[in-house]
Amino acid sequence: MGCSYWRRLPERGAVLRLGAKYYPLKPAYSPQGAWIGVHLTGAGISPRSEKTLWTGGMGIALGYQHIFRQAYGGSVEPYLLGEITWGKKRLTSPLQIGMNIGFAARRWERRNLR
Image (tube, rainbow, N blue to C red):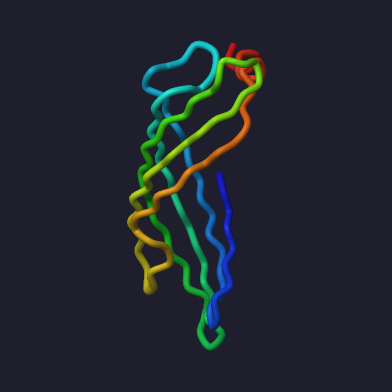
């Protein structure tokens, strides 16, 4: 789940993104490998001279996550998100490419997947 806020004159707004990932390879100890994600988005924008506009959208993301062999390692998730939005204004780009880099703990995942 993620939330972002932007302020671009004369507009300002917030985007809330909810998502879920599915790992088709069903890893035994920690989420590693290819993933498929489904995302739902909702946004509200507020131009200075108009009422707040609400829009929504959905998208799908494909990516790969790798957790290193150490008990505590890292994860790398490149993703491609295609998004369809509707409403009176276009809020986000319909195609987003990005990279998530973070820390991962194999021991923590093993304990919580039982």
